Image (cartoon, rainbow, N blue to C red; front, side, top):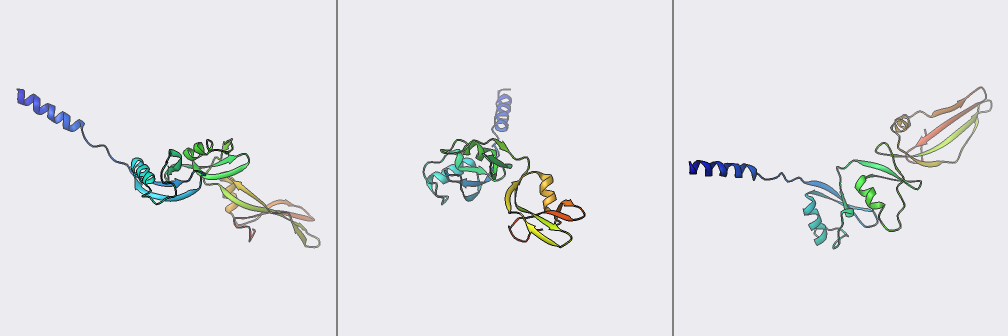
Length: 180
């Protein structure tokens, strides 16, 4: 009976001491100013910190490493509005760190879609009787709404006004050239 109890106890101990699964990730390394440095692949967080601290990962960070110096590449990313300037796409962890960095600006909002798209736009106004036209100044803006980005990927200009004597088109491009 004593052997049976000890055997049963040994089996329970073996089952409860099963190894935890080690999860490895790909990581984006970031310097203290928020600039992306390099990607380190297939490491646990503890391995990554050791690698960064020792300088083995061959980054400019070496030495003091905080959790703000890296984030998982697989984390969901968003665009961030920082006092009217759009940054991103970055994960929540990155934005939380950005808000605490010296001389940084408060993060008032987040875009609702990912990724955001940077577009150059202008208006083309045509006077139909003569065919003469002019262009407005080109503006650059980050658009984050999925419906807008879907509309923008269509290659046709967007008609703002079309009447008997004038046609106004909203043209856009991703490059700043070749408007459509």
